[in-house]
Image (tube, rainbow, N blue to C red; front, side, top):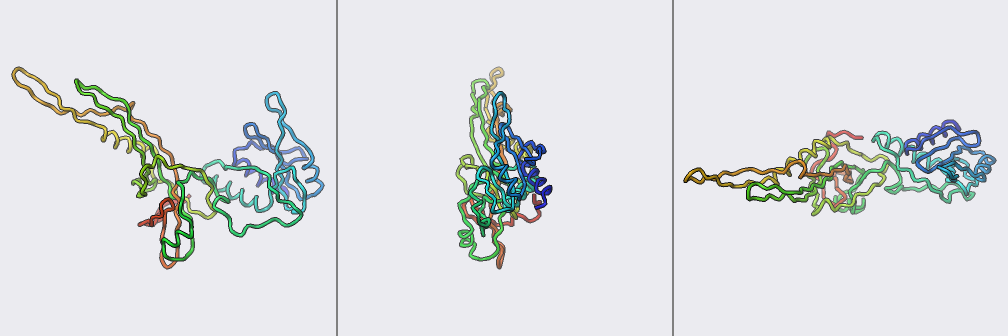
Length: 319
């Protein structure tokens, strides 16, 4: 192990996860702080240093009390014993450094979960032949999936290379409230509507969703190598368009009478809601798509299993 390079990589990972990182004092390489949590770090293959680090307790002062620090060890010595530490091997460093790089590109904070695993048992590090969907990449707010890769192949009717693509959408929830009185007429502006808009094209999503507002969005990691498409439509501009559209829907024509002498005339007046009557909440979410590249290219959105009519990544920018 080249010690300084290992320390630099671990520092980058922790800083990507919003930790404040400081140089160590010799016994440790780094100390990192996030809210009320402290993590001390050692990068070493030396069994003596690892044993000393494993046995020693570290504390830091929080307000008027001492709090125990968590211990993070990066080592490529698979025979070292460190049962009191969170232990990273070379695979962990590869995984988390990849996540940190993609999080940096997306201008996001890395969601890093530090936990102990039973890794060092005198044998070599176990290698997983096929990573699961949650193993790599940045966390994205995802529309839930119900279609597996095997099911996608059945729907497509072809075999071929599988790629994961994530399409940005704006999920909005609109609320109209209040009322206005115009002479003897009372106009009610109460309304609720939710929807899903493609953040690349600006058009309504073609998914068959009875109530988009009931979708449970969850943050999940995506695999390394996935295509994460970049939103092309500005969020504030999309909010404005939806507000204007809903304002038109809630505008009412009111017919009022006017008497002049012996003549009664009627006039239609438009009554529209004001800004105080309109509210919208919008968030950026991603629709998972499975692309199968075989005798032809078929793309299947994994919410309901529909085949997309148009390629999702033609002429759009990738993150």
